Image (cartoon, rainbow, N blue to C red):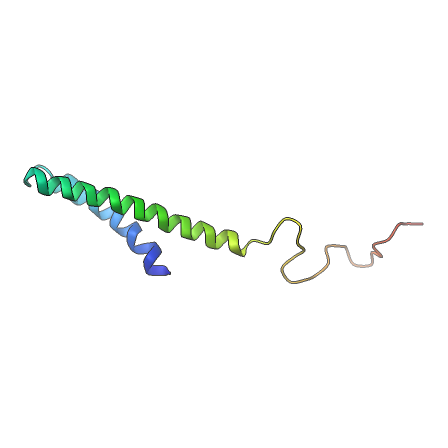
Length: 84
């Protein structure tokens, strides 16, 4: 999963820089392809960040569930019933 997440992030940083440096010197068709590849890399990095967010959400317990270790939320010495 690391390559599928971090490689698009690195490409989305490198391609716009390369596009800016080379766009004036290249033929218009090649510069267009380089710009399109930068846009595709940006979309791929968005997908990678989505994968990271989904992995974080999957590790977070649901609101109604107890703690992940199975411990009770009540303080020590509490009976949990109605007080008399």
